[in-house]
Amino acid sequence: MSTELSPDTQALAGLLEQARKEYDELAGRGLSLDLTRGKPAPEQLDLAEDLLSLPGGRHTAADGTDVRNYGGLRGLPELREIFAELLQVPAGQLLALGNSSLELMHDCLVHALLGEVPGATSRWVDQEPIAFLCPVPGYDRHFSLCRRFGIDMIPVAMTPDGPDMAEVERLVAENPAVKGIWCVPKYSNPDGVVYSDETVARLAAMPTAAPDFRIFWDNAYAVHDLTDEPAEIADLLAACAAAGHEDRAFVFGSTSKITSAGAGVAFFGSSPANVKWLLEANQKRSIGPDKINQLRHVLFLKDADGVRAHMTRHRTLLRPKFETVARILEAELGGTGLATWTSPKGGYFVTLTVPDGCAKEVVRRAAEAGIVLTPAGATHPYGDDPRDAVIRVAPSYPNLAELEQAILGLAVCVRLVGYERGVVAVR
Ligand code: PLP
Image (cartoon, rainbow, N blue to C red; front, side):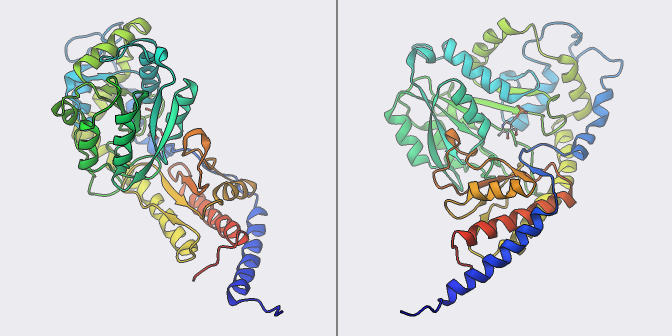
């Protein structure tokens, strides 16, 4: 029997040896870098510094409301006017509320569980078990909300146009327990997918077995473009109304990644019946939102064009970071067959896909070398990516020098794990 190694095996042995050396060198550098969460960098937060000294001495809204006092459950009309256009919700159907859209999604789930949404025959809590469709990869905090409330999660594959609509239509048509779907329609977290007009039309029109089915339309990245050609998405609320499903959509958004993350303003938009439903529920838990913060936002942002102009400043800071990620991944992993990655036109994330069975190990090796990534699997319901292949990269927070080091180090880990697992290089 011949003991000669095939050229592929020899090549792999050489590559593995090289990758091990590079990894040892990386681990010896004592790095401490964090690519976990899509947080704005301090320079981005500085862009809204002037907002912090507003509203100055002023404390009346356009209609004379004293913003220091209780009341105004819908939020300031002038702020709702600004975001109506950006979130594709008529101002009269848009509420400006607290500081976090995730809180609003949480509250809508709680209110639907404990009180009937319009069109429901009973509370969701009385119909258990209920389920939500979860396009994957998706946003881990959506999945955490489902887990917290015992809502079953059914994964649906993402396509370049949004969720696999044939699968969505089949699941909602046959199963009345399916009460909702999570959607991040523009620059989805983490794939950067923009829903096509056809996807929006089909979501609006599809027959559902549940009469109280809701689309949780988390438009978190509505104005967060990374190119000079903003993606446009179709108007879901209008499409639902036109299809005779006026109450189907809950639209969410916030200024967390426009002004201040944690001290911005969150929005809820929907049909008149849904807005009334949420207002009635909110009335029990609050005597009104923080209108001082809302006035501050009106004075700072001024109008929809003011928001767009502000977002170009974010883009100036963010774009070089996404370009850095793309450049380094191409230089380090291009042509190796070890990874593919997204080149999003907006949003906050890059998805790195490694060979099946490698994502957890890459994340573990990176952590050991001082580079913290979002846990592999977090992009899937129950933390379970069945292929163990998806890694979410969040480039916004580190500065460029740190980001460069982190992505270079990540590439070393991908090579190490890939070659350990026997993925033969082709370059
Ligand atoms: N929705 C998505 C898709 C997000 O990526 C994030 C934050 O990263 C949020 C919601 C959180 O929004 P907020 O700060 O308004 O709660």
